[in-house]
Structure formats: C-alpha cells, structure tokens
Length: 291
Image 1: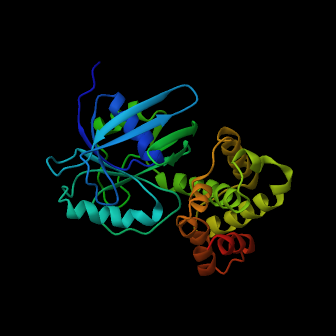
Image 2: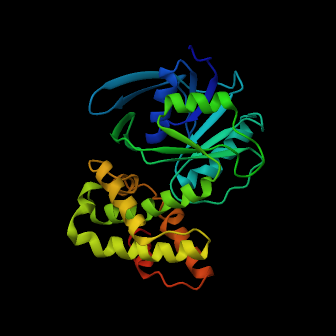
C-alpha cells in the first residue's frame, strides 16, 4: 500500500534528526530542514553512512512557503527552547504536532503539543556526514505530554515506517527516565575518559558505573520512578554492547569544544537529589569534570 505524502519540518540535520529525515525521504515524504542558525542556501547536501551503505541526500531548507503536517525537533537539550521559539517566529500552526527527541530532561513551556521520542539508536554527525553506529529501539508518546492531544494516526504510521522499530506508549515518562539512566552512565564516562561506548565494558570502569546507577536509583525512587539495580545494570550493559563502536554525543562535543548536555543529564539528577536531600557524590564528580 502506498503511503500518502505529508510535509515534515525537521530541525537539522543532526545525528538523530538525520536518521529520521532519511527514513522519511525513503518513505516518499516531503522533508525540509531548518537549521538552528540562519541558512543562506536553499538546500542542504548531506550524507548518511552505516556499515552497509552510504547514501547522499539533497534536502531543501524551509522557505516559509508551506505549513508542515509535523515537526521533528531532535536537538541538543539546551537548544530545545530556542527551537520552539523559532517555530513561533516561523508562524507554524500552534496545533501542529511537534515530536521532540533529546538527551536528558529539560523544562519547557509552550502551547504546542509535544510528543517525546525516546531512542537508543547511535549516530554521530561530523559536518554534513552522519554515521549510524548502532541500531537500537525507539518509543514514541501516543499523547502529548503537555496537553490532552493524541498523535494523529497517519503521523504515527509514517514514523513507524521511517524509524523502525518504534513502540507507541501511553506512559512515556518512565521511558524518559530509563533513557536518562543510560545517558547518566555512558555519556559522562565516555567523555571524561575519551573512550568509545564499547570500552566502558572493561572492568576498570565497573565501580564508577555501579556508583552512578545506585545513586540514580535512589533519586529516581524519590521522584516516584522505580528501578531495580540488576535490571538497570543490564539495561546499561546492553546499550554499551549494542553501540560498542559509537562515540557518545558528549564525547564528540568535548572533542569539538562544544557545550555538552551534562546539565540535562547528571545535572538534572543533582538538582533532584538536592530537593530530596540525597547524597550523590559520583554524579557530583562527573558534573565537575565536565562543567
């Protein structure tokens, strides 16, 4: 059955937004990029690479000539509020569904319906080249997190076809915390020690991983999100194994002297720990190292 073509505004191309955009284009969807800075050119030339194939794309930039059917904001956590503000400046309809994907947890205030996408896919961007380094799973909120609005069925289907496998979930908050757990262990340690995800499996990092997980569980419990240590540890190790060749986004940011997302990850845990009078020395240490 042929899929109807809809118009998608994608902020990027970044690592994850590039993966999504490539999938949408393969599904014959109309995609336009909006960069976080002003773009003079009318199109973006970019390449998606994985172990099996290299594919080149030329994607138009958004020129205000149409209203999108959906928006993809797969951006850095510290860029999210600025990206939402840009949607206002572009006069994008306020009821247009906005699918957001970022590391960590950040506070946002908007009237737009936000649908979090949680993914464990691994990818890096270098210039206009995007490398997919590990295939994972994704979960998409069926209802907006900030208002009682359901994600339209046709948008859900196209996302499932373009970025498989995706599981549609009603309780995305628990998934956000599960992803936060992964972020809080893998990202800071790989960035501090300048190692790939797979190297974190080595025994010398075991105690630090354990401490981060144990502290995370205490804070999560105080925030009414329950984790058991054994299953949490297994989740972290599964992602390390599945993305062994990947260089975490935080490591890439450090290597390129860019801001990191530590504040939305371990920094978020620090703030929650302070509110609940919980001691989290390992999280303090990694934040200090990357501040």
